[in-house]
Amino acid sequence: MQPIFIIASLAILGLSTLIGVFTNTLIIAVNLMDKIKGKPLSSSDLILATLGTSNVLFQFIMLINDYMSFLYGDIYFTDEVFITFTVLLFLPIYSSFWFTVCLSVYYCLQIVIFTHPLLIRLKMGLSRMVPCLLVASVFTSLTTGLPSAWNLYRVVGDVNMTTNHSTEISFLKMNIVYLLPSNIISCSLPLLLVAIADGLIIKSLVTHRHDANRNSKGELNSHAEGRVRAARTISCLLYLYMSFYVSEILMFLDAFPPTSLAYCACLMVIYSYSPAQSIVLIFGSPKLKQVSLRLLQCTGLFSKEPSKTPVVLSIKLEIRKSSAE
Image: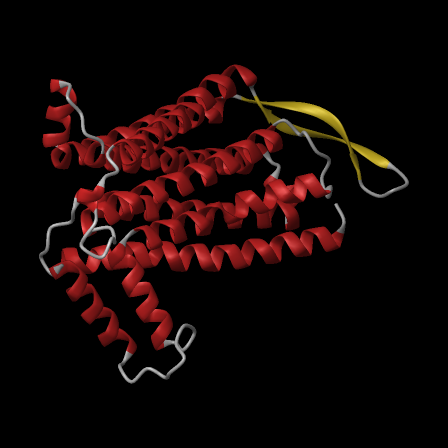
């Protein structure tokens, strides 16, 4: 690989890690503050905090993985190290996908009007079902991710070291017998479920769109705004999910040569997935959005006038206000 490509990739990865860790940590911290104060976490807040934790782990593992692969290839491509990072990368990726399904199903059951008795019972017991869904997501991720350690085999190939000659090296590759079913279970299936939930939410909004959702000024009431915000959030998450999914598939299939424009585009999509997802989640939650905007105002990044309230106090007041509402 060209040195300029390596430097640019590592710089972008470092920046995306800073943004991703900050935004996901903000999601976790805001919800933990409510829990520390003795306030019970809502089902959506629990899913958001869990999803944020998974994204932080994925961001750090991906940072260490790519830095080692670029800078310490001799150590990284040894069997023990490569297998370890492969498993560590699969687990948070699969978990993030299934946690996204949990959030989509939660919003779907909250918004869509069902008439089937089973779905009505699921809707009534949704708050008790969410922790079970999260545990099931972790179990499914472990079941499909851990076997990757025993499904790698070594192949021999040519790698262009310079423009004049190439060298023959051996490297580990994923067994298609494992990769195909695990991809279907923990990548394709969650994507399908998120798409179905998003479709049901949008269909419900379009079907039940009437004047009862608006006030005397013609504006949407708070309940209708919440449903529209949830639909927008799930649609954005679906778009990010699909972009990440396609990029990962293309990278695994070696569809593009390294340093090519298409390869770089796939790499950038993968690097930006966690930060972009956390930003979507923040702006999809009124509490997180208000705290984030207050934080930006206090730091002078989102305010025309200097803030006169200390940062920590402003955030605490905003969290208290949002929780009361």
